[in-house]
Image (cartoon, rainbow, N blue to C red; front, side):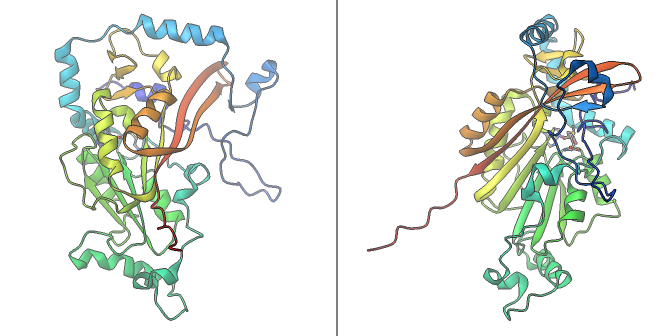
Length: 362
Ligand SMILES: C[S@@+](CC[C@H](N)C(=O)[O-])C[C@H]1O[C@@H](n2cnc3c(N)ncnc32)[C@H](O)[C@@H]1O
């Protein structure tokens, strides 16, 4: 099988993030941060590997639009149908070939999405079932054991946890394992699912997989009739990293509306995905287009390129409200080959409205 276009697009690969690891004056590598290096003098473009918040000129935008139009003749309906009905098989083949070597751990998660980091605000006293009533909080190990008890409770995995995160389209765990490693909050329980059974198997056989803190399962995000192993209104955070773009655009709204039901009031959905005119979109040749801004790669996996407005519509239609939406425009540079690559990613957070406290009676 030919190398997937995904490798060209480096969308999830090692250079996907284009992260800048800043050095502290003690020589320690600090947490990666987006948006800290700006190209002010174009003559210096090859001095670094990446530049942040790059402005696009009108000409550049027009050229991108033209390129997309040139390659927008869609494949015949039977081919489009085949890529849709066999979508999980193509991803299974992808993971059979690459196993856990393709995507890199997403360590930027905690700076971009602090909701995934240990919760400073954890109020143990309000939740004695998790963390004790005697004022002297149980140690983290004990609390972790309490969170895991739910597995035997006959409820649902992690039902006694205080803070629940679900990653949909988790692949081989490049988001989930960094969360488990970084966030030792004893009340945390992490769920992760993917419709590739090969990927989920790789998560479960990873030595870092701890069934006391995590539950991985096979689930198709676009199958809105299928049950999740958690009840509606039970999740604090849902993470969607480069997964919504893999769905047929016609299925996106129902999928988002279905998963939004799982959020608690005040819970958030966190997304990072491809933006319109990202380099990966402009690289598609004729014969790869499925519908407007939706393409199939050489390995049969599919990808859509979003605008902020489209995502806003999807999330608000699902009853969520905007907390953040930004376009991350980054210029990546191959200094050896003197190549420039314009990347466009969208990052957003949408929240389910918190329950309003009842009005104080007079
Ligand atoms: C580009 S990969 C990203 C993987 C992971 N989120 C990461 O960032 O490393 C997209 C993932 O979404 C999964 N996926 C695609 N369509 C899906 C669907 N309908 N339901 C669940 N998972 C899906 C694929 O199997 C694949 O693991």
